[in-house]
Length: 205
Image (cartoon, rainbow, N blue to C red; front, side, top):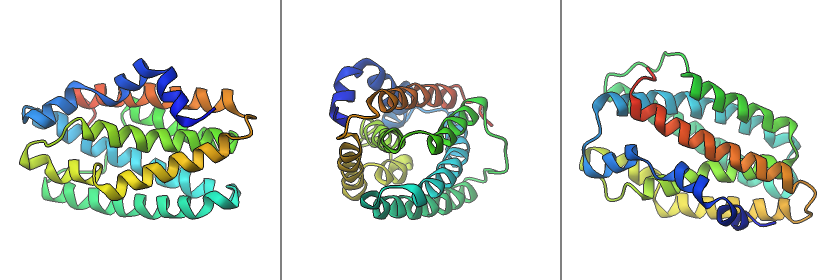
């Protein structure tokens, strides 16, 4: 199985994960302030969980994947700092509890440490690929959201997602963990959809 096979096999679930009224409203400039604030605060909580999980995955990862995971951990640390600066500018407090949807996403990511590496890297690729495609759907976006859109649609991030896909393909090559990897992919798709729903409702703060 290849990563692209998952995108084709589960096209409807993937579309629900990467196309959403929240993103349409970012593109059109009609997004409610409460929805955007909810997304930012809860995505900070999510990124904090992802940062911790990726750091834990690193020591036991295959040698061919370690450099990529190191760069992912560094990127996530930078992203947390960036979110903190954005929240300060917008006068938003990041000292809040995760919404149940965010908490469920974090709980899922923590299970990756106990899953085969092929499943863990498939989930990691799916998380980042979902953000790339989701924010691409919001292009060009209104000026006040341009920094956010650019962060997850720029060529460097797209190249990183491609590297993740190649590493994922290497991990899947043996075929020993196809079922676990497919299950992880579907869990990411469902959690991404639920996260956008939560942000869109503006009830996550």
